[in-house]
Amino acid sequence: MTARTLFQRLLANDALNFALTNRLPRATLTRWFGRFSRIEQPLIRDASIALWKLFGDVDLSDARKTRFASLHDAFIRELRDGARAVDPRPETLASPCDAIVGALGRIEGDTLLQAKGMRYSLEELIGDAAQAAQLRDGHYITLRITASMYHRFHAPADCRVERVHYFPGDTWNVNPPALDRVDRLYCRNERAVLTARTSDGLPMVLVPVAAILVASLRLHCVDLTLHAGYAGPHRLDCDANVLRGEEMGWFEHGSTIIVLLPPQAALTPLVRHGDQVRMGQALFARSSAGGT
Image: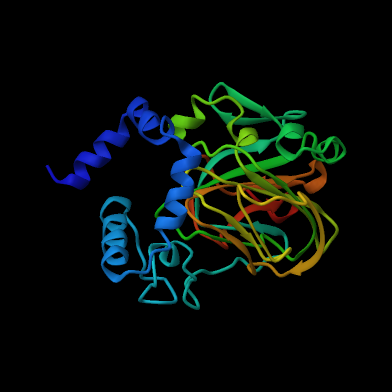
């Protein structure tokens, strides 16, 4: 049995996976990994990237660069031109990232599904009662970005980002074993709430949620890197126009993006729970467009 096979079998055990990735000092490990991943010493860099490829099913063939200064540089890699096709139809909402589809569907009043038997509050997630009221009974999709995936995220549609609300927090893993065990996990973790409006006036909210080993979150709309040591302000007004498929920022490691839409969006999901999607792939379509 190879080391990779043994590692994968260990992680396949949910209880052991949870213990290995959550019962460690998460904040300390995250800060340490953030510093370690930036080491540019060639031997450390090459060994780190080789181990990441060995255990993570990493494919760097679609990266813009073929050589990286550090493990961190590889994590936040840009794509080469043409590596992703962005659905151009204005009646669709495109995926902001490469991801695995978690929960999706209608928001039940103020409640969203985290995992089977586990729910959380929309108002607690975004920290704004008035905004939560606008999204009540709307639509949502949870997109989990694994450690091996492309870590930058992009605009699902032509839109204007109006505000960012940053919440410092914990760094629980966001994989299924943790989602099945940690109550209100997304509301506990470090996250940012990006309030936007599409070109046709539809409100849209993106919530990038950090996780263990995620050292920071870079947002272009406010020209900031947000992290546990960021002192504020935590509510940031902005006025940033972003085109469909245009880069909005990146994670330092794998994590999650939750997309929230109001009930008047009249959207039909084009993907299902468990599907693996790529940035630019259509996630929702207006009902009149014949979504399935």
